[in-house]
Picture 1 (spheres, helix red, strand yellow):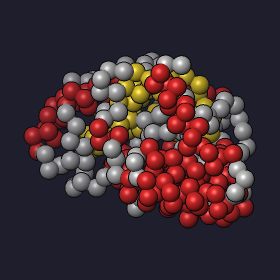
Picture 2: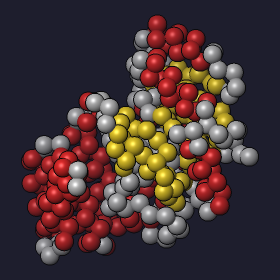
Picture 3: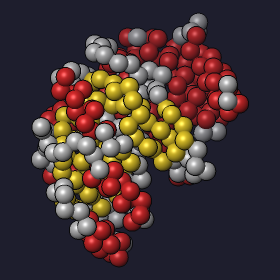
Picture 4: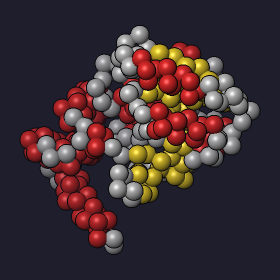
Length: 299
């Protein structure tokens, strides 16, 4: 069986939380793994050493512990991990998330069967109050499809970096993560991979994604920088397909509304209507709000 490199990036995370992530790798049913932990908070010398000591407790899987020379952000830390990876496949795990024990085994089976470069999955959202919510992206679909790149232009249905298993060659061939982006770095990488390769969906929840106050109230200005970057980068595709462009603008408008950035909501809604006046997606925010109301009421 091919080796999978598991890259965990960590920044100022309490040892107990990081250890939960590491344990979820060690407990994988897939046997041929290596773990690469990249610490992006070298200024915290006590924590740096605590992590080193904690990692010495594991002897069943080879572990490489890397410390960045300075804080350079999660995506540069992931790129550092990519540089040191020796597996045929790579999987990223945020230090506050955890994998189900059979996550890599199921994705490996599918990635080999379909000769894909990326296999993603659904997940559970775990909130601070202990509630657990199954999340299946509405655009995700099983099987081989030739239009996955175009559909990724609509929205990031692959999701967080903690979800997919990827071909390391495919990741390297497109240049890894773009560290100039303040958000949407994962979406940008999935797009670059899907433009040239097959991606497939494993229709099972295989990850626990822990929602923090920081992730809920993340900086909307940074999000917009990522949104606008991708709109400009793929403008030729968007302008050739008004349906895709209209959907994307409405999706961004809803993200603004969800984050209470009303100025952005008005701006992108106007741009969406301007791009295509008679589009069902122009009432996307009403449909999504209605669905959220139903979820809260338990319908």
